[in-house]
Length: 428
Image (tube, rainbow, N blue to C red; front, side):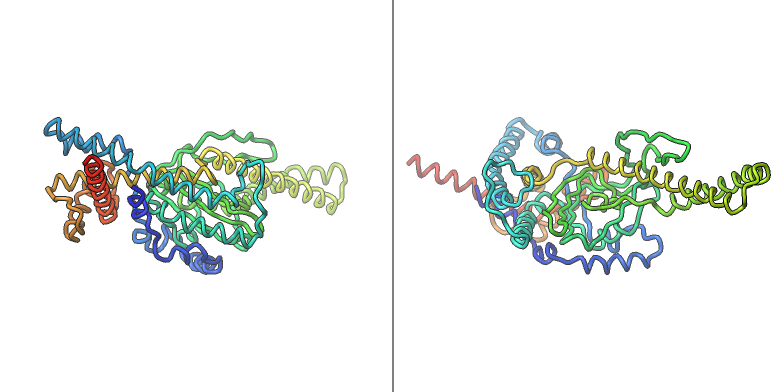
């Protein structure tokens, strides 16, 4: 059964170039977006990002398909359920072997390993080479898991553009990173509910930022994977949920929270107005009654306003840092070695769902699965039928990898036929 998953996890063209790209090209992309006037999405976004993740669990998919396509008689339904069970069993060993290979490759650079005897130390260049090899071997798993590689356009857009309702903003210094890579799936457009976080208290010197209870019309992803390596450090491999496109930079290590231009304008305006009122109403009285010199009064007033400004900006930055920490805490799903297992399991599940869909629609359209190469017209027909069916269930467009699903289905049928022939020979 090993070739079933091996054939599915084909390494994409240009993976090495995409992994080893430098920060210089990203800086050039960022310069292009700085010149744009209020861009709403990355360039050619609908072409670069196509949602391929099937938004139904395997059990939900089997339930819907059995009711709609395999409910004419009990025998047909049992045959379908038997096919699903055999498929899931046949994928266990291949994907388990793939996970073991990834873990063996990743273990020497795993920052979370707890082995009693540490392996021989690797130099920084050797670690960097091993990290890139892990990412190259991981790319086919991510592709089968229906993750999209986020392009430099998307990353440059996220680093430059901020959503109007995004209270926390961070500064990213690209010179501190060897590489930055993002993958995402489950794009959604709509309100994004905020997670629980402690409410900052107001004080006389500062006012806590007011954030709406939910952010409207945000483009966000159900899952985002980030692989980033700060210089002279190790690779950070993490997965997050419900992350806005404009907030991707918040997931990077070594970022600094900064005050947005809107907040700075509001704070400075409020300080100037309140300071002017205080100086006119109080300063003149103090100047005449206490006989204090004008220069001394101005000096004291300037010191007071400087302290109040510093206090307000520090309080605002502290509140934003706390909000960022809570976001990273509540939306983090897995990291490092544990993430390898989660990604392999997702690839296995997406593999099974694609094959189940291909099998059901081949039966529905009365197309025989004889192991030969599928005609392109049949592939296109199945692709359209499956995408239409998924859109009716999910409510949005999903791109179905029909060619890959049919290839995996053919491998499954060939493997089943070989197993039956082997069993007959052993019996004879």
